[in-house]
Length: 221
Image (tube, rainbow, N blue to C red):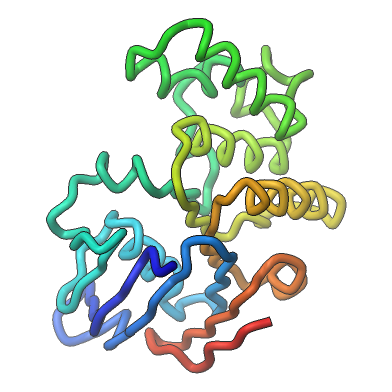
């Protein structure tokens, strides 16, 4: 099932200097798609266009057959969770437990439901013993897991993860791989933006390479 569709996508920050050039893609909702490329290739920009953080200069991004340019970021966020390269951009609260429940409290959810969801995610992401800790004082791996958990609290249909292994050692990468595999079993698909070929090989069903804003290969595992 196609969930995100990119049609003749073109984007430039500065007039006449394209970052993304005429990309056409259909992204399946229920599989893991990897976008690979060197620094400066345009992969982070592409992820932000897919999420609606950036609007295309030309072309169109469709999410569930809706033009993202006609959707608010809140509407897109209800469907797609986005992980920034720096997980600290996700944090607002004093403790891990407060951080996880923030979005649900903001939306006026029932306290019992909030507590139940927070507990579920603390267990899933192996953060039970950190729930009273300040998010900014966690290890890099714990910050990454918490950031993904704060995205999942809203039950998005899909995830876009930008360089999720930055700063992680091999053990913490393995932990994250296992968590993401569990999420796919629950029916959550994702696009992973990365240059970490080992991580991608372990997870992806499809690998898309971009260079200077253009697709240079599109392969399936």
